[in-house]
Image (cartoon, rainbow, N blue to C red; front, side, top):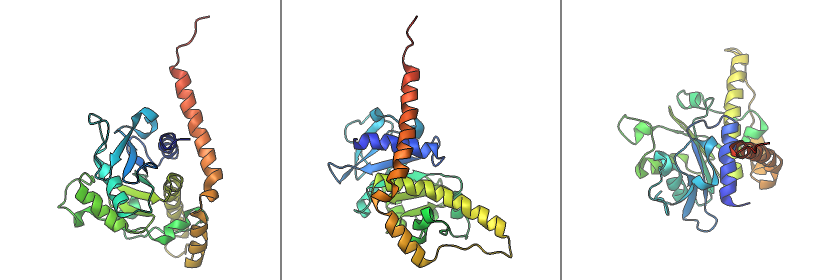
Length: 250
């Protein structure tokens, strides 16, 4: 399967899990040239097809289609790829359960095994540190670079009042982390509510994080999950294509 096909499936998977809605995007570093990346033109993720994928340089200039409508926040991707040679995929999303942790002093913590990577540290990007108060959109190379700096070597960063950015050494891992970041945030809020003011939530300790997160960085760990999600996404695409075909008259 080509990178473009995988990227289309990634868009569909993130939409199916409620990580993205009409907004949000995912990119992958080009296999042919590490100084380029693939990202869809500006559109709702669930509608992305192979024809919508564009190629960009790391300054986030589109290569072959200067007339394409582009995401304003494409600089998130280019600047992270510049600063993180180990990163091969980037997801930016506004998943709802994650946002409250970016606007409060309550930290995201790992509380179940598939969210163990959270224990590696999830910093919060405060855009006011890098521009005067205004909109929260990462629409310049300067803001993209500042987000990449706050992200540092971590697997994800919260964006105050906006959402998050999630990265991975593969497209599969970036998507998996994005889905489980949302789920972990939701479960943490539920656990904190159950515990109440006098209770206690038991989180993974450092040794559990190291053992679990390290093992899950292997591509083989997530193959069953990825294959299932891809099968569902392909079925959705096939159904859409069938619905568009003209029906034969009997």
